[in-house]
Image (cartoon, rainbow, N blue to C red; front, side, top):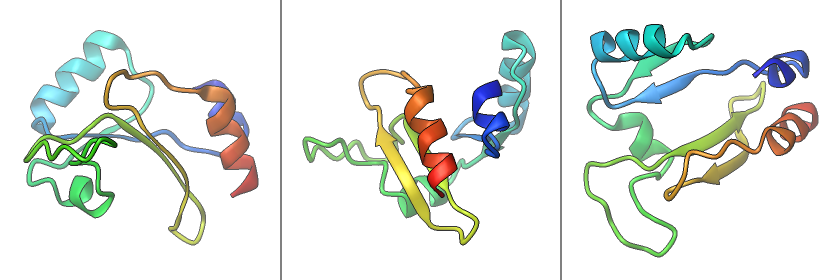
Length: 99
């Protein structure tokens, strides 16, 4: 996360869990970034992360995803990570620098 912030980025997580659940998780894991609540899946739907790359519709389940949003509020880079929560920090940093 430090490399992302050093490149001018800001990390924000989004979860379909309640704020209370996310606060508890963030505290337990000592996360250094906020977790926003998206219980009605508006953000997940807007970013089209309810469908797996294979085309399988997961319904009201958002897939693990990583997005870099540029200063103009456009998606500059994304990775859908339906099978893992791997964060390719080098790719994210490159996308932040290019945005």
